[in-house]
Length: 133
Image (cartoon, rainbow, N blue to C red):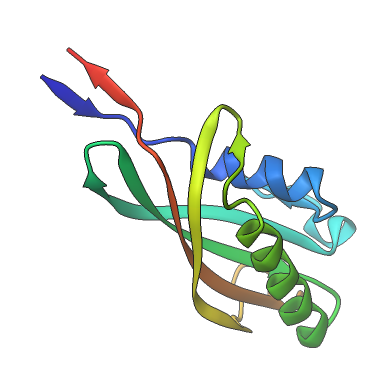
């Protein structure tokens, strides 16, 4: 029997962004977020196994910056950098396609009231991990 073992898309996205000039993290956020700006959080929130060897990962990017304008700009840049993963192998995973499913928009952060944040979402299609039990 095969079981679903999704790729760690938070780490995959964080690695690609960091290697391509976009400061990024997976959860948890740094304690001193204000000292790390701009910063993009890569947060997977589900997906589907479209066919036996292809997973669609729904990913949300949250970007904090000094102003909302900067947050939206940096969030859009991070999305473009992730879009460039198409056709590459990242952390041992073949990435087939990246679709930006929402343009960056201001996204108030109630946990960091004084730091502007923007958000966007992407669908990342990558080779599935097949595990037999």
